Length: 304
Image (cartoon, rainbow, N blue to C red):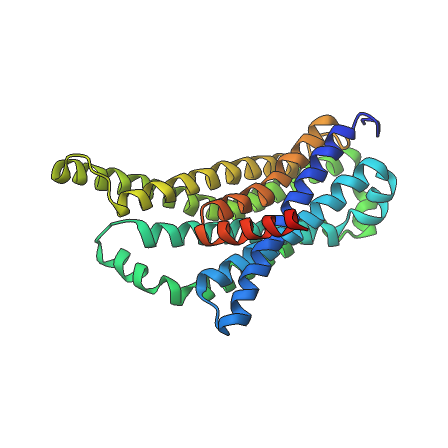
């Protein structure tokens, strides 16, 4: 267990990530809601950005409660805060955030990749209509994952059974419950990760084929399609780095092998908090419309 003084760097990092995350995710929500009020209609991408912003906002709040209370009020956190409810919200918002990021990568892949297979074209022209169903499916999948995880982590015990069990059997069953929980989370969250990796790989292949075709036909001259491929690939690769780092830290945390309150414990929390902040920053930087609104917002603050 580290002291509160030695945890100050963790608090500073968490505070910076929290302020940045609240700002950029709040920006995503406000800008797209403003467009809804102005045009009285919402495009599938605008709906996705609102959902991403809201899920990240909630995830940051949960991570901040975990981070600050575990540093300054560890006993209160372990007795009053940490429990089935906190685990449910954490699992739900984590899963939802990962699924929404996967939906965004699928959208980029379908809209920009130049594959001509019939099933790919069918999805490409219908992804906008399917977006609402993808978001609903992500919500239900995340809700189910969180509920199952809570059920696995907090099983019902009977006193009569407990009286008959020896210490060795109790330790074995506790270990089995931990392994089952990790396997459950792995099975639930490896699916969006696999889709994310597949979309990144497909963008790589599409860019390679398009570049090869352009070099043979136009002697290496870039066109708008090539630039779109490269920009999308940069965005998805950055997404991928945040995605993998969060996933690895999340899974390490869910093994419960990291000592509570240790430096490694806090480092994992910092890595997980970087995902909902950094991912949303990349979304804004990769969208020219968001960049313009964000610059206007910064200019207004400077003028004041």
